[in-house]
Amino acid sequence: EMRDPYSNASSTQIMTRNILKGFGDNCNDITFVAIIKKDVSKENIKEYYNGLYTRLFFVNDITKNRRNRIKGLLSMLWHTAIIHSRKNIDDICKLIDDDTVLVSHSPSIDSILICRAIKQKFPKIRYIQYWSDPITLALISPKDYTVKRLPFYWVENRLHKSADTIVYGTKSLYIGQKSLFKKYCNKMAYCDVSYCIDNETTMSNYSKKISPMIYGYFGGYNSSVRDIRQLYNAFVDEESKLVICGNGDISLTKIPNIDVLNRVPQSEVASLEASADVYICILNKHGIQIPGKVFYLTDTDKFILVICDGDYKKEIREYLSSFKRFIFCENTADDIRRVIKEINMGQHSIDKSELYRLSPKYVSKSIIDGGFKE
Image 1 (cartoon, rainbow, N blue to C red):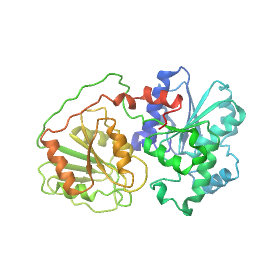
Image 2: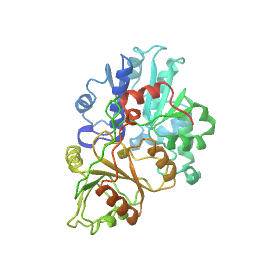
Image 3: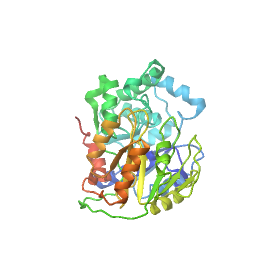
C-alpha cells in the first residue's frame, strides 16, 4: 500500500480493499499485512480498510526506497530474503498454522519477500501470488522483450518460484506471462479484477437517451503510454461535452465543449464522474495490461466506452466483450465520432448480467480456488 488512499488511491489499493471484503465473505479470520512508506498515515490506512480484517500489521516498504532498491534486486538474484522487521515476521507467524492460506497482492516485491519468509517457517502452507500487473512486461508485450529487461526477468522468475499458485488479474496478462515464464505455466491461472460492489443479482438490459451527453476521461495520458489526441480531436465541433481530468505530457487546449483539468483529489474525481454520462478508457499503446479504470464504474448506470489501441487490443477486446458491459471503438477520431453518435442516439444499452464475475466475493473465491485456465 504505497499511497495515502484518501488523497491518492491507487488501483492496487482499490483492488486490495475489494479482495479483503471478498475474503471476509468467504472466511472468518483475516490477517492483513500493509506495506507502507514511512510518511503514510497509518490511521488513514486503518480507516480505509476498516472492518475488512481481523488484525492488521504494518511493514515499512524497502525495495521502493532508492537506497534499498539495488539491495532488494540483488537479494532476489542470490535467493535470499530481506527481513523487513524480524519482530513483525515472528509476530505474524504466531497467528499462522499449516491450514492458513497465504496470499500476496503483487507486483510488490516486498509482499512476496514477506510471504516467502513466512513460507520458510511453514513449508506446508499454501501460498498464492495474485498479480494485477507484471514486472518484466510492464508496458510492453512479450514480442518486445529484450535483454534490457533480463534483470527484471531474473527477479520475477525468482518471485514465482516460492508460489504454489500464480493467479493473474486478467486473461491477457495470464496469456502473456505464460509465454514468457514457460517453466511456471502449470502454476499459472487467471481470474477477473475485483472492482465492483458485491452484487449477486442479475440485472437486465436497459438503454437511455440524453442529449447533449457529457463524456469523461479521468486518468493520466502520458503520450508514451496512451494516445489521447484522437479522443480530443473527435470532440472538436461536437455538440456533446468532453471532460478530461489528469496529467499528461502534451498540451490540450480548453474549448467551449472540452474541459481540460489537471489531476485533482479523489473526492473531486468522484464528483466529476457523477456528472458524466459516459466514462471513457483508452487502452495502452503497448503491453498486455488492461488499465484498471476500465472497471471502476462498471456497477453504475454509466455507459463505458473502451477505446482500443495497442498490440493486444484484439485479445483485450475479446476478453472485455465477455462482460457485455462495454462499448468499443478504435483509437481514431473518425471511429470515436461514430460511436459518440451511436451513444447519443440511444443505440447502446447497459447490461450488468455478467458483473457478478467482478464482485469481491466471486473474485476472492476464484483466487482461493486457484483461478481459471484456458
